[in-house]
Length: 535
Image 1 (cartoon, helix red, strand yellow):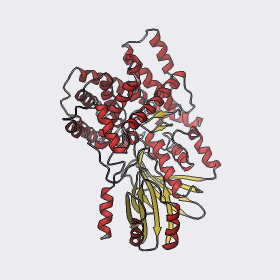
Image 2: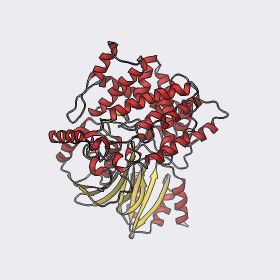
Image 3: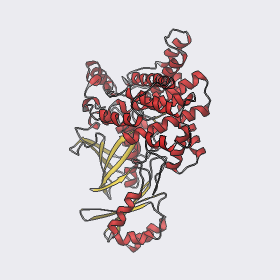
């Protein structure tokens, strides 16, 4: 009977992976570093590992499979930096992240990194062996794209922690059904599941708050409890039991809207309000805060940026000079988009604060296109928020039907996805219709199938800058085509599904492994040698 009840509970809970959030999965996190799937994901994994050890960590062994992405990218794309920061309890935008390698040494934590045969079912797979003088735990986690993560195993016990609940893990030598029955009537929880392996009993409790201290104390005195761990959420929007959203893809959204006549941004608010159990004004204010961060990042980028471990210098300033002296081709709108995209990418490359939208590697496309266009046409902050919410909802559909991970689907999952989001945002910015916005996204995504991820010198700069600018330009062209009522022919949902299939057929060497394409050119290899030598 208990087994059936457990199954029902597990089926009734919602998680980050089956209901993407605009602010979890798509536009965010606010961060530092070259890569969200490396820096932020590693940091979040590190934060959970820190909680597993109650903040007392003496040694960490970090293992990664030789056939995965981390074997070639963990150092230069920021996985080490993010992991160290998470183990130290840092936030993703903490200015100390850049020096986290030294800070981990100063904290007396022994770090060992090594390749090991841990399986490569996902290219960004982490295995951490955590130790202190009293205990030792093993944690296996995945970075699934855009900073999202999933803990899939702790101490040989399979489970799923995505950072969207308060998690309480209870190890016991007693019959776990007795403890579960005891707790069921005295705590509020979203799910309580028994996990077991090799005669080890673990009760995993997902809830909106941690269990009260007194309840845990009584539990330890009344039952044979060997260990209790409390793991804080790492995502801004929590999940909950029986969570429901009005639609999951563009086709469902259009059917939902048949009798409502809502604009795309209004549908985005409807979705996120349901997803996060928050008010319409809270959704709007959260996006407004993010846009203000984007504006500050662009402004700081235009002031000039410096960072030692970098291929490109600051180029946005010279672009601005050429704009002002009318020495550039094209018009004011596209040039502002190029300028803003470049400034944002330069902030990323200098370890400044940026917004992953939907990833750090594609962080210039969406704000560059939307805020650059807004600057050119004089759009209000309210209109900018509406446009960015529209982009966020398109991102939800992409997250549901594909991925934002370049390691899985190449750069079409990053710059390509951002371009499709930006196209819809641009249509919304000028008050185009819902159908035009959806069609613009379909056109933009069709244009970027097969885009590879092959960064020069294993840094997220070249050809990333050019691809971000290209993606913003593609968004503008696609938006104009849709506003002129060009026929996209293939509906957005079908395009997303096809894009996912194309992405997964891209060779491993061209999916952010630094093993092919521009990454493998003599120039790339020489630049990497020089930069690594200067560290």
